[in-house]
Image (cartoon, rainbow, N blue to C red; front, side):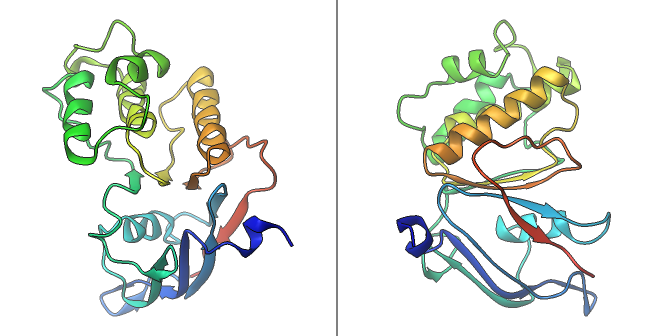
Length: 211
């Protein structure tokens, strides 16, 4: 038995479910996610994948079951800044530049050790577009600006809902590289995707959504 297998899970769900108009969106879920792990959230369209990630991010209330963070009941104020959600809505202010958007994010949550807005934007592929208003960027560039938060903010858990959308082949490879680096450094991630994940750090954990 390895140390990783005996460590307290970073995130744990017990009989977790979400109801909309008194009807369950998905069957009760039980899963654990440990530091250094990647989990793929799988299921048909409408099975509740996005709903699950939004609930874990604190954007939706749990209808039933329990969520635990580092072995304790999950309280949003205690893990603020440790869980980072990236969904279809990118959370960018259109009239601000990528640099300005990232500075706001750092003001709220701080920056990862050794990371700066300038170096992160260069690595993410936005060199030369740092000060362009987001509304003038292409869909792929907007996605990269949102992905830059993953590199910059000191979150332990990434919740990524279709992170490959609007990205070209190079952008898809970039996301896979970010996931590898994050889990290698002891972070964890939950990802919904239709097949673009290429992970070399072992078999990802799989969470299957059922109606």
